[in-house]
Amino acid sequence: METVFAAFIVFMILLTGALTLGESMISAQEEIAASWQEMESRWDEYTRTALEFVSGETFHSGDSVRVTLQNTGTTSLADFDQWDAIVQYEDVFNRRRIEWYAFTDDAPQISDWALEALQLPSGAPEAHGVGVLNSGEQAVVVLLLPAPAAEAVPIQVTFSTPNGVITGGQFTRNASPMLDTLTELIVGVDGSVLISPQHLNATDADNSPDELVYTVTAPPTRGNLSLPVTFTQADIDAGLLVYQQVGADPDQFAFTVSDGQESIGAFVMRVLVSQPPQIMINLGASGDANMPIVITNSLLAADDPDDMAAGLRYSVIVPPVSGYLNLGSSFTQGQIDAGLLAYYGGASDQFQYTVTDGKTTVGPFTFVITVTP
Image (cartoon, rainbow, N blue to C red; front, top):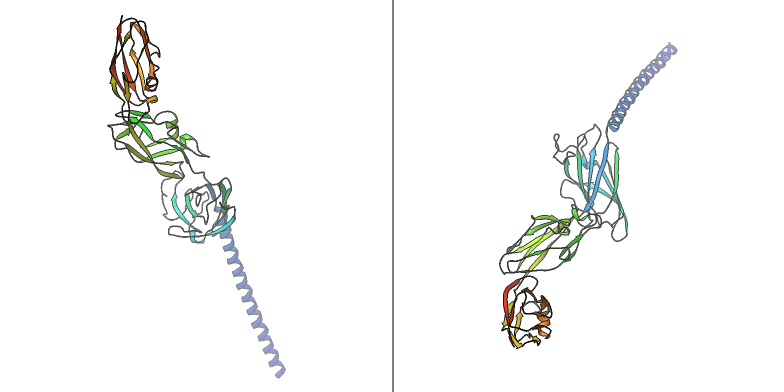
């Protein structure tokens, strides 16, 4: 009897073990099936996720980076705080850097990255699902570098989404525009002056003149510019920028220069008003016929407070009729001061003239010559 009872107990233990093993196998199979389904779901999501690097640029003199990414898959992307961002570059101190960036909802600090915008490729704001990078939309991302990037050296930016999709691209630091020439303008009273590249000239290593945009931040108050508040270096090169003075007071205007990514300035162009020349002496001259009559500065003299004698030019607009001037129809106050101007003729005569300092012209005036036979 005891043997039979023992056998029964053994049988029950075996049966219980078999049932337990069966349940464990069923549970394991269910877990495997669930894991497989989850893996298939993740794989399906991975295959439907595509992120494309569109562009990259630097700004703030190379210490900030702006990257544009586009969702080219069918899976909407969010959870930006779980994205990884890595930047590899060489800084201006020739140090090779590999930096990992954390997402922030605030203004980015060094080693942070932030979303500047979620938008359509046209630049318009995202159409739906605000805060989510939907299919066909772009994410504009800003990262701050711990040190400015070196010029002409590739910058590699890589992004990884939570589901394992990785994208990235390379670009180089934008070269900032440089203002090579900025000189004062000198204009006559109520006059005008062409602002040429000799007065104002900007260059950029990776932008053409038509891409360098001037913006007037403080316009002139005593005159006007011929172009609107924005114009390009190409406009200056083409001779399209003219300053027109109103009155006799000095003036100025302020401006910045941008290549579309970075701006420099503001700079100030000053405008000085040249005082017009004045005829101080116009006594006329006298002498004997057929003898040279020297016209000295005691007989004919002009003065200008902001120009030298050599810069004051006479132009004869009505020449003498009975004789001639040895220097022709154009001469300077400096030549008169040197005793080089003379009249040759046999009868009394006269001529009409104007005087200019290169900015303002005064006249006409008449100089009378009395000849004794």
